[in-house]
Length: 424
Image: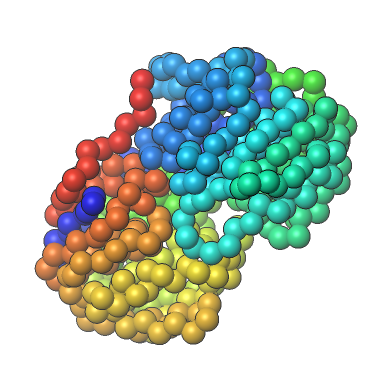
């Protein structure tokens, strides 16, 4: 089993580059299904989830080749509009092929998705929206079967804010007949990045980044080039890692535009942060101050940064209250942090974290992607060695994390796995 072994106590110092955003890259890759012309994408992160989606698209008939610092996808020869369980079970984002397949090919058969075990993430809003656009959908033997001669524009009001639901309906609407209005839409920057790519492909979209998106369907989409946005969650994770170790880092090829609330919390904790055109510089104090937070849809505090802030609160001065409102099962990392000596009390969707003078290294187990990141952050400051098991979760969302940490001076060793690369 893959492991990460950390020896804590060294402040992180230096400079690293931030990779492209996983949560933007996955839907944008699926957008290639919407056109018969090539789609050239740059700044794709080298991650397990990206590799999985490449495999999924290839088995449908999408071809790919390397461009100059980019990948060129060609979906002109798609002949198998099926997303099988074996590929979908490890990655919930696979559901994002449903809308594009249905819009362009008139049919799709997609396995119900898997992914991190952080709580219920139903796809009913995807189905409800596509049905409003005229699709005939049934769920049989673990698969979503969808058919439509041509989707029709509709007014869709989702019962809850859903990022992947918004993205699926947005992509489907680009080729639908007439206007589609998506109300209660997710406002995340990754949704905006997808919309920007679709607009470059010829889609008529307005309102992305707000809670109401208007899409005027077109007959077809065309070839385009698009650069995937930098990963705001990776950026936030390295800022937390530097902060907890009392370090000083410069993160390049990134942006603070979508990180206001995270930067505000780190500043509240005592960090000095400078914003540059394409970089962020952080200098941490000797010991952080505890910061309380409440997760909520963008632009509020992101649920994907909750675990990282729990880790830094474990050794901060004071008591912090963390309330998780997005996923009902996203405190599983708390038990593992307690193994390192953290003082955490859980009551429903609220965690109270009392900072302790020090953590002590131990063997812990990653339960999901962001939980893995919290254990890495804790291991960087814990006395002695911390061994993190089941780190395949990390490879789903952090490109070469061990190498980047080592470049900042961390003592980190990966046991049992070579780096993943996107196949040529």
